[in-house]
Image (cartoon, rainbow, N blue to C red; front, side):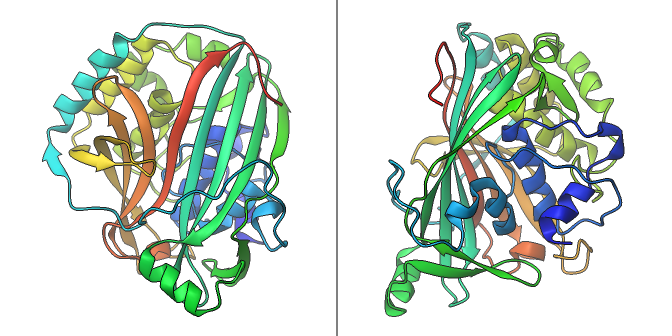
Length: 379
């Protein structure tokens, strides 16, 4: 069984075989892969791959997200995309610590005051970046753009690999010394390698028909989102009905605060919920004692914001605790508007799947480009 099959098999049986929406399925699978390969003890599910605001994405997960166009084929054409400039994957100087509670309460007030809107489709666009190591030793950033249009009855998506590039100037020098190869063989945790291309790939479109197209610890519909509690205490109670002591996509143990942070992030980032529900999500996180905040954090698009974060364990590739490390799951927000900018996974203590990365390395990020109602869709 390969790692993707392992993750599918780890899906809790009580959730059935209903497919989850593409943005949250990838977030959950990404987190599961960051914790190591789970034991295949639950029945298999074929997920819908695509858009996410992930806490942590492994290189093997990116295979599923961006398909064959991101893998070992030659080139694949530009598909209308351009290769983005590569920013340092190792982060910047340590940001200034703040009161997480005050930051989140301020964001709640700002979010609650945002005007409401409506449309036929809820449209989101994001860019995912994943750091991996080439077999030749240098670090590589793989990028992909994902768009989604969601209605009450289904979801339409478009994903495009944007290519892989050396992560830093030093990595670029090593890549150039190796002959600037257009095909880069990279390491995959476990037993295998795979090949990335430096050229953008062709866009891939998909459609998922069905009402249960969002993920909040379980499959939910657009109607479910409209009925969510607008009070933080009631919202927390609603979410915790589905907490069972482990991650939603693996059997790896997960504390209640971390589970709430991970599950709630979608409400804050890119789900079509009311301003009052989004504000309640901020206030609920403000009540979690293990959440921290830092000012002066810059996302991969160069936007400055304030990060709220929680720490999680990173297990070894076999899913065991031996050699585990610590990751920071952080959400970057614009305090002036209450709008989420990005979701990132940062290495705190190297170990597990991130054992070769320095502390402070942003090894995965998903930056939000757009989240708004529209009356038209492109695919």
